Length: 276
Image (cartoon, rainbow, N blue to C red):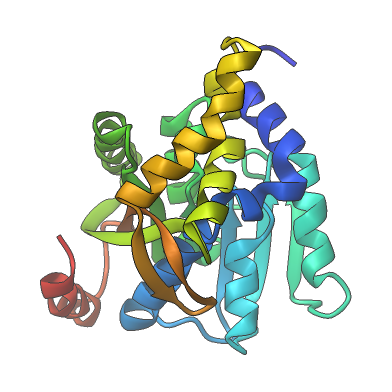
């Protein structure tokens, strides 16, 4: 496999698959939950829906949908084989309507106009060709379907880079022919029950940043990290419980094919006060 951004990302996610969701400390799941809640107000999921969980990782989006009690047909796909293996293990056997496959977002094997809902949670930015990935989202979306794509807008200390990502996501979705009706910036948190646990999580998560440091300097990182976390962390409460963490801001983009019904257009307008 060539050393392209996609293969590099795939290799990274294959290696980190086992601890992926723990390493995000709930922030990825929290953003996915917001996205699915947003869908409920625009084009609700039903048992008749056909859903793409694109760049699915460990199947977080699929898991949230199934936990809600709704049983649509769901196809969870990702280029990272180890991620897909974990996703498949979460619901294979108990949910025959949920399927998992190794499949890159730039080359979806589904026919045109397959999905009523296409959800890409924190995945588009990791594709080697985001434009092609967006075109695949548009191609496989039904004429009356809805595409929801999330990405980080603010994630210290990469504020500028994440803003570039957010604008790029909107641009590639528009370039693929999707009408991006709205985007919502929502705060989530990367954290744990205590500041100490959050600092430990961030130390492990950012270990690559300190790879070139001397062993003496590396030994100082946990203490400094905990000190900074105690200065910057904020309390949060989410469905899984309360804790302290570093605030992240994610963006949810909502798009559709250009031709939508008058009633759907009214639905978009009703949502505008909640969306930026």
